[in-house]
Image (cartoon, rainbow, N blue to C red; front, side):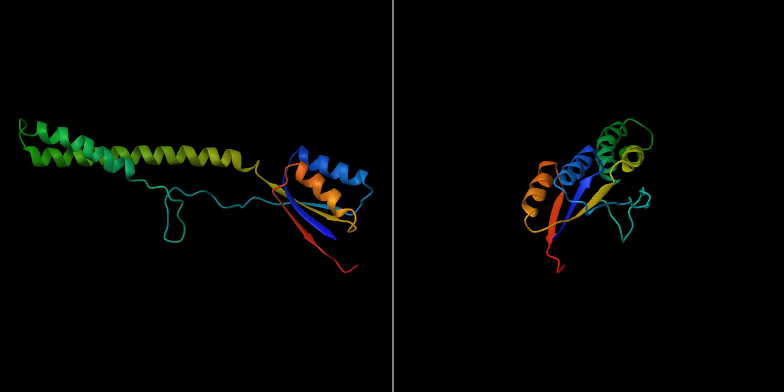
Length: 153
């Protein structure tokens, strides 16, 4: 039987390998996975979207700034309509700028953490009698997933 399990690259993986070796199983193969080289992007495209919007805060601040600007426009020279539009434009630009700065900060944080999230696939070949013991060891050490395949050998 072949057992496939995925783990974080951590001490738990080393413990599983040591315990399985103590059972007398020597056919153990660990394959580290690479992280994708893709750079995180600031703006969405038609083919890729992360679900975050850059205009939510802009629309909110446009409303917040346009109401007082329009009410002050009754006193000012250009009138309430122009001052309401100026307040809305200022609020929208401020909100979009805040969203862009927050997104850039989020991208930098993801880049910093990204190198530490590699996973490892562990492949163990054992007899059918040893499967239950190996499976128990794997689950005790926080495997992400496990698969068993019966081989013909």
